[in-house]
Length: 167
Image 1 (cartoon, rainbow, N blue to C red):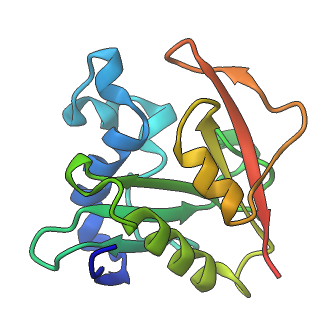
Image 2 (image 1 turned 180 degrees about the horizontal axis):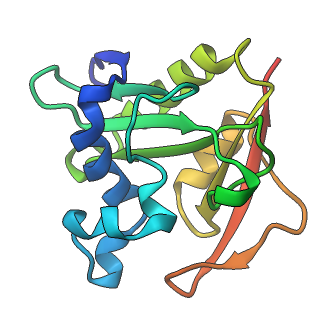
């Protein structure tokens, strides 16, 4: 594992979060670009107006060129995200640039974010493709599948919701 610089996500990181949402959502597989994401409400809700009350995130990688982000955002039942459980449990989005995958950056960011969220939230939820290798990371950190949450996603594959209960 290479050395990793981690810092809190701030409102000025919104452009980076759009790039990371593109990676996290596998939008390129549907022929979309980063510029398309703000027009897709199911995706834009994860980043638009970042820095609102309740938003919490971690940026990782070199200060001059961050390579990843992990962030939490609260949703309501009327504006639910893919991994929505209830209005008090924020949903996780995380992505690492292709050039930094396998370096431990995702693990470092997620561990930091979990630490930051503990005491602020009772749990964290997420939606993940069933075959996504990141699912093993989530399991290793204590996330468990939510019974009955498997759905067919935008790409036609299976996604499920996972939850981590925070101590």
